[in-house]
Length: 467
Image (cartoon, rainbow, N blue to C red; front, side, top):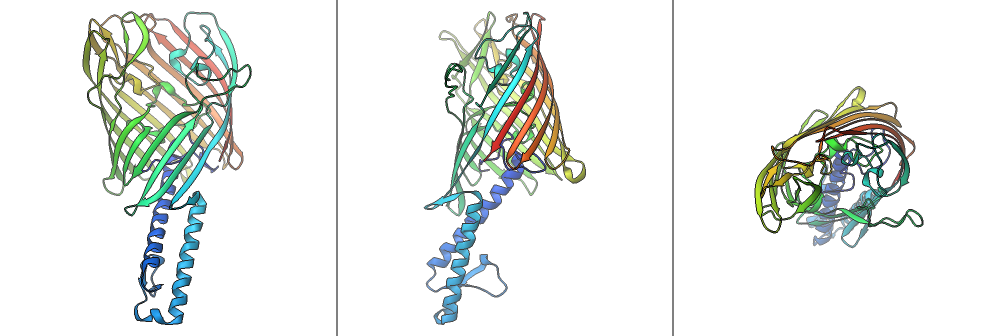
């Protein structure tokens, strides 16, 4: 499946009665446009290459161009052929203009959004250091515990996003390159908020796609992006969400009219803690890639997916190297309901061992390295979100997420996160085409191995211009 501009909920599109970010709808629209472009270009090539002017046989469509044969020498047929070529060229230009501009044999599309996010946060059990990512979006593993309450107000534009794609025809099918960037980079790499508020540009996705093959950096095949809820936050119910972008090679193929299969090999990374340190250690020592398979099924308006993951959990501390088998299953989907399917339920349920870095932005480690052995950590996580379209320009979403960590029977630090949950509700409006405004209220909590816990209350505001 080609990877294009609207694949993720996080990408905004034009305002519609449903959220403009619906990835499945945008994917279908772009697929239809690219198929039409490929067909039109093939027709033009055939018509131009024909020794005689091309005409359309009686009762046929533009896709049934045939040489005019003996009639080609007649002035009327020559004129008809020229007119047909001109008509095809005009049609091609019309289709291309809908989604981009053409340079040589490649159609380019550009887009993205400008997003301002602001939030007032109440940390009930401690303070958060300057530059912590929890100040930019909901990140449950950074909820402070065991301290005095504190408050914070902050605003930024780091989630502003830009993308560009280039599509040409190769072997009769669209060949697409896609690059997507934003400014939500790690702390310590940005300009000072005292003066310039500069944010570093960072690659999110960069892919090459052709005939169901995708190579590059993309959303993990283990993740169902279409299930993500609309939120003012960067992710939303972070603790319950599979959320990974990484290098991969993926093959997508249809299994009938309503079922699809995706098979992928993806970059293997292991994140572990030790019995006496909470510091996540990232290890790139695996000898095999991660293997992922996902089946997607459409039932009426509903879209469901089931994904399976095999992960090589490997640690090398410079003295000892050890490996263990990690696995995961994830069920997700989007189920429209109500009049005209205006409302929908979105959900995800994930479980496994040794796959902590795939869920909740590494809320749990993949394993605990203790006594020269790596011990996989079990996780169960999920979220649900109900979205109601109140009118053609106003909608609301209620969501909740949870993650439970099952540590192995070895010593772990007292501050290791053992569970987290959150609930949130928002209202979005589209007062002008391509302009979204949203407010959201969130409450979240984290518990650690010592039994201590911390909580966050947050009020968020967002405005976003989609182009």
